[in-house]
Length: 311
Ligand code: UDP
Ligand code: MG
Image (cartoon, rainbow, N blue to C red; front, side, top):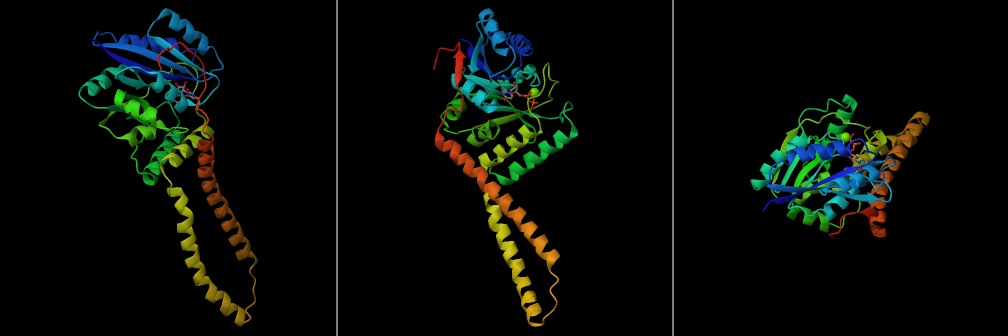
């Protein structure tokens, strides 16, 4: 009996990549210990990804597709794929071949040795992204690690193998806007990391610009920690103490009739505290926004069409 492995691949405007990655995966699964299915999630692509996927599915029975009604983001695409996958192990990877399919073999052997999660992390800093991006990525991992109670390795990718029992746990989480990179760490089980060097994007371009990356970083941090909410308390204490020192000075000045030429200090103080208060309000707003979205309980994605029949 060969084991069924599911490959879950989110694809957003990847018309030139889906055929190439299917081929690359085919080459990996050349032994009969394993059967495989490839589940592509078309995340509302504007190009011909959906048409190419449907054609591919006609030609190869291993290829399955889920078409979203619009773009819902990569994590939601992963979520849909994990729910529809029926393998004993599920591997998620990017459609652009930056996550080398050749690593799948080693992931599978580590899984057979008894690891429930095998995740890849960038060993070498990405040669194909700018140093600014690499720097901001390490700042992100440092921040999330110091703020939350999960420990993410710098460069943890969405390239990982999950055992069926881990996927069952993830599928049962009612999380709105899931952040899988963190969630997978959070669920526990026996985990093993494996280094990889990202390849160059096969075709097309990256979907993540600075704005998207900032959004993702904020989502990562606010999904796993409420520590930013405590900032207000600490800052409040510090500034109350400092102002205690300032009050005697103000009183002495008043009784001695020292000329008050306080315009600069007043303006600086107002500007500083104005900024500080807005920043803290913003942090509270972020969490409130999360609560608001979760309370509406809308689905995380809408499936327009799929050729997967199981549920
Ligand atoms: N992706 C997606 N929905 C999105 C953005 C990206 O499904 O809204 C997919 C994309 O098709 C690719 C993977 O997520 O398979 C990683 O995206 P990309 O290669 O653009 O990110 P990068 O490698 O530059 O971080
Ligand atoms: Mg990529």
